[in-house]
Length: 298
Image (cartoon, rainbow, N blue to C red; front, side):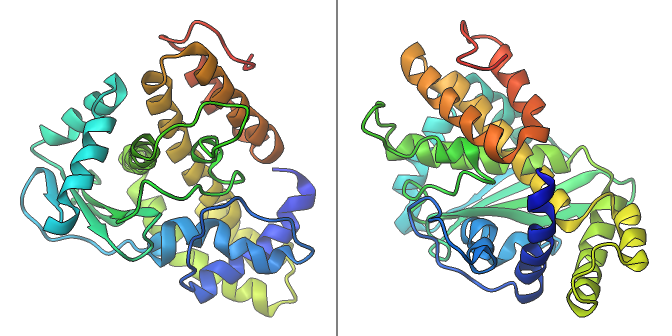
């Protein structure tokens, strides 16, 4: 992240996490504005909605994948699921959870935050193993393109005249892949640290907003050491892991080299602008088979 963005983002992420306001997502990239403080909450909350902070645990004793889909959404969900499973990456990840006797992944659909999705309700056992999570998909997941700042992969699917349009079903499957990326990553991290972050981030924000927004406050610096970064850095890291998994899905799904290179070049452009320090996780995907060309990635 560029240093000039860090200070501003401290203020903005604090606003997001303290107010946790529900913001309606609109299908467009962020407009330039002279008041980024007012635009920023929409960048994360609009896609993940207020459940961005939700770590409520689940008590379901079943294992595998539990698809809790309202009947009125069943047909569209099946299309999104089949699209996700049309790739090796999608099938591999789906099967790993479907046949895991020690983990329950619940997938549901809600009309709230219709064009977005969220993953939460994580639960760990006494051994520190992740045993449950819930993915909530919006009822219009096949529409709407998140901003390029935190979602460079999903945003790359935004229709442009110079590139072939990717249909809504593929867009929805890409969003599903992003959420699977969150589950994949959360299963690998230290649960004690994750839960400590959930507990102390609101405390960080409260202090930050009350001390004149001084990020060098000794109390804040101590909290940063405890939770492994600032709130901004923590959320960025989580989102870019989700996006890396979305890119993995698109790598397998888009077989036409010209179309894939067009998408990957757009992803690279956004990563260069907004996520340069996280570039490595995207480069690793660009370099792995079945890609024949790096499409601008080195």
